[in-house]
Structures are given as structure tokens and as C-alpha cells.
Amino acid sequence: MKETRSYNELLPHLFRQEYAKMTAVLCRHFGLRHIEIAEDIASDTFLKASEHWAINGIPENPAAWLYTVARNKAKDYFKHISVFETKIRHGLKPDNHKWENDFEFHEEIISDSQLAMIFAVCNPANNPESQIALALQILCGFSVEEIANAFLTKTETVKKRLQRARNNLRNDDFQVETLTGPEIRSRSDTVLKTLYLLFNEGYFSKSNHQFIRKELCSEAVRLILILTENPLTNTSQTNALLALMCFQSSRIEARINEKGEAVLFDEQDQNRWDKSLIEKGNYYLINATNGNEISKYHLEAGIAYWHTTDDKNKWRNILQLYNQLILIEYSPITALNRTFAFSKVYGQERAISEAEQLHLMEHNQYHGLLGYLYTPSNIPKAIEYYEQAVKLTTSETEKQTLNRKIERLKRKDDGQYR
Image 1 (spheres, rainbow, N blue to C red):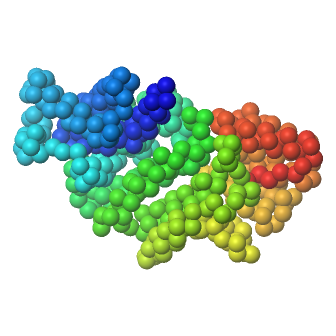
Image 2 (cartoon, rainbow, N blue to C red):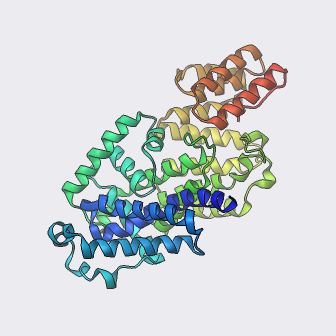
Image 3 (cartoon, helix red, strand yellow):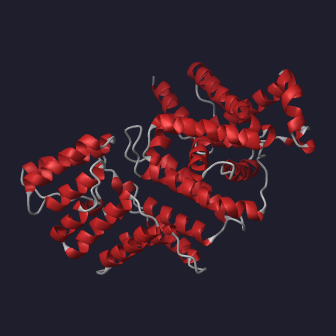
């Protein structure tokens, strides 16, 4: 029974970590026109693992086992399926026909394939939203539900968007290969936004009833590190986004207590913050200032930096950065976070009018913020807003956190919003 539990925990983790890598390498040989074949082979590999491991136990090196099976399945496909001869071989580049000798799953190939894959998927043949949705699904392994949550839209809308995007890729017949400088520069914004959304889904998850999904945060950091290792993608924005991820990641362990409950910012034990990640954040933030560009990632990285300090002017600096950020790219979350920072500088009473002007009635964070702002002056109203936030959130962990706030208020114990 113990081994079964271990297998049940390990396989989903490996699926998240290795499925996208496996698909990327396979697509170097099949091409994006036949991406479904690559995905089918990867899926069959994990299906075989679920059947084999349940009976024979987990192999000593599970990841290597998966790649060996995937390699053998792909070889068998090329050898025995007539579709290869009639529909695929002519679409491959001439130097790809010696598949058995050239194809390997090793670290360099996987890294190169993923970098090429994300830039291939972020193809101008699709609009930016479709590029991001497709990259989240293919490269990062997001489900349709997770993509819908990232875009704050309906699952049916995402399904249609993905289908159209896949058709466009097939029609464009784009190959997963090394791209030119102009191609990389034209797609960099979409690639960075994709990794930004990936990290955010891990850092504050709205799906799977989890508050934090560390594997998504780690995957986003790993992928953006690949970008910093290539001269064409090691840009100011790339370093700024990596700095942001490092600063945010430094507080992950402090955001959940031993009971699995969310710990809000003002209540976190700073001794649990990862100082080495803060130092790395500082390093990449300095790298990001080597040019004249100021992007949203620079501003958000600056905000995350100030959160790691105890400077007396911390919140004034954060508010100033939010004031700039909201001009560059408005979003409901940015507006709400700016209002929270405003309350730290000018007080909760003045911040109430700022918040109410936002009219974000369908956002649970809006009601949660007003619950926090009304706590010192009007406890019944604060409870009312918190209860509305509970109704609107899809996160079980967030519901628990809000309900704890409500219970504290009912006992006349002031709570903190963040």
C-alpha cells in the first residue's frame, strides 16, 4: 500500500515535469504539423508507466525509464506505421532520416528542444492570446481548466481558441528548430508572458484546490533560466522577470503553515524566507538595469524586492511602482494591489474610497480587500465583504483563510488582509 501511494504521488509529478520535455524533443523530428503524434507517444508512455509500475513497482530511475520507453515507442512507430512513409517522411528535413542514430533524450537536446519549442509555438500565425494558450498547453502541460483560470475566461472559449491555434500551426507547417534573431525578437514578448502566467498559476493557484503549486513555479524558473543562457534571449526583460520569480519564490515556504493553511504576508515568519533566492533576485535585477528599458517586469520585480526589505519607506516605494505599473498595463489585480499599498501609506479609511471606485464586483479579491479595509472601523461590514469573497473564490485554501478572518472578526479579533 505504501508503494502504491508513492506511485500515485510520483507519476502526476513526473507527468508535469517530463511530458512537455518529451513532446518537445519528439516534435523536433515529427514537426508541429504532426504534433498530435508526438503527444500520443508521450501519453502512451505515461499510460504504460501507470500500468507497469502498479504491478512491478517504481523503477530505480523513473525519468530514465520514461524516456527509454518513449524512444522505443517512437522507433517502433517509424519502423512499423505506414503513415510515416506516406505522410511524414517527406515533411522531415533530409538530415533527419537517420532517426535511430541521431535521436537521443539527453539534457542538452531536451533543453534546446524546449527553447525551440516555445518559440515555435509562439508563432505570429496566431494572435497573442492564442499563442500563450497554446504554449501553456503544449510546453507547460496546462489543462484547459488551468488555462481558462489564467485568462479568467470560460473553458469552452479556451477549447475553441486552442483548436484554431493548432490548425494555424499545422497550416503554417512551422518546424521546431533553431530560430533566427529577428524571429526570436518578434516572439519574445509572448514567450515571457507565457512564463509569467505559468509562474503565477503556481504561486497563487486557482485550480486543483491547491494554494501553491511549487512544481509550476520551478518549471517557470527553469525555463526562463534557459533563456538567460542564450545571448539572443538574455535580455533586460528576461532578467527582470527572473528577478521577480526569485523574489516571489523566496517566500513560498513561509506562505503555508504546517497544517497546509495559507499564511498572509503580514503574518509570515521571515526566518523561513529563502535568503539565497533573495540574493539571486538582486543579482538578476541588477542585470535587468543594464539597458534603458523599463517594462512591467522591471516594476513588478521592484515591488517584489521592496517586499523583502524592512525599509521605513517600503510602502511608499511600492505605491510609486504600482502607480507606474498601472499606467503601463492595467489589470484588476494590479489595481487592487495598488489600493492595498495605498492603504499602507495613507490609511485604510482613505483607501476605501479608492477601492470602491474600482467597481470590481465579480472579483473575490475586491471583496476581500474591502473586508480588510473596513475591519478597523466597521466589523459587520467587513464580515459581509469577506463572506462575499468566500462565495466568489474557487480556491479552497483561500476560502479557509477568509473564513478564519470571519471567525476572528466575530470574536472581535482584528485580522489582516494580506
